[in-house]
Image (cartoon, rainbow, N blue to C red; front, side, top):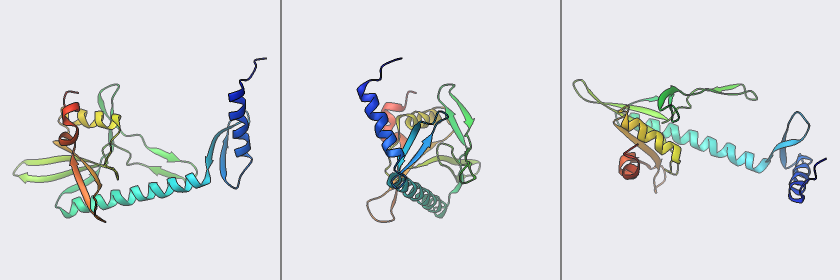
Length: 181
């Protein structure tokens, strides 16, 4: 039998201690009966609140774009960076709430504005409350622009004033680094 390292033993005992505290922790168990995912109930509550805030901000951005005369729709595609191709975004199903999430594409919205006869501006809009994109999201934006799927990509974020929405152009903000992908 293999000897267990002291650090691993302490981590495992800490997991068991947390798993036995249903007042403060929620535990998921594997087939062998060992706890593998232990979440603090306060962290779960924070996560739900953040998710709700993000959804409300996304709706606010959509209304703002529509009020500015743009046609806005949910974008249901994504980029597979390994294959370098456009794919249909995966649908996510939560078996506990029996909810199917469809709009999980990147970017969040496609915005279309009529410029003149036969010419439209097609803009991808990603909604981020803090305005920060991950490295993978930046690569996806660069790919969309390189393939000319979108003429521009905007990053919607909260402004300094209450209720203000600011739009950053991806190429203005990250263009120097990502214009050659």
